[in-house]
Length: 298
Image (cartoon, rainbow, N blue to C red; front, side, top):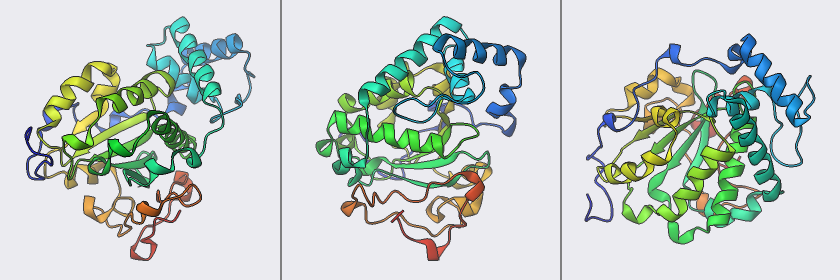
């Protein structure tokens, strides 16, 4: 609750805070959207305006390649208003070039919080990022390092979903309290998602959500686009059956209702060479997690 440092696990915020649970028919693969004549015309026009090759991807100095799917993301983010979409992509490319060459060496203290890891893919093929909000320690963080870490993570997830450039997030609020929250650190991250990596979240599930999230959500919600708000799902305390609808059991950790016995561990000693983030691969190379794969060395 508001006066306590840590929230009780049993006190969950209602699912009504966020969007409605997605239906299988809600997800339209980008490759299907890119078949639409209007979309094809706008993607071509964007490429012409930016001097990108019309046939193939553009490879900027830093960051992942700019594909047709990338351009589609920016068009969606600005409701297919061409000039607005073009400016958004231009600003993103400029910002990423200024950020330059980045690596985990630039953010090792944040890695050692153990605040997130990768595990498996959803049924739609999007890679899954697990965020352990209760491990986030603002006192260990520097804004610039946190921005770099989030940029690396987003770009890794984009590369792991070449078909859609989107990912699934599960934010676990177990042991989360006000001491784990910093508005000064969260605001720059929201700007990154809104301005530089738009439309990369396919769906975001919040679990073990404490009541204090009512206050936090009231501050964060106005900063998010309507589409993003609708992708954030606050699941009830009995969340496992809901996750099972969207993630196959072998791709979901046992603690979340799956059959994978893989456990994230060793993050306290994470390094750039061994970030302890789990397994992140393209969906065509999905591992079958089991007790024998209980390691976070990859």
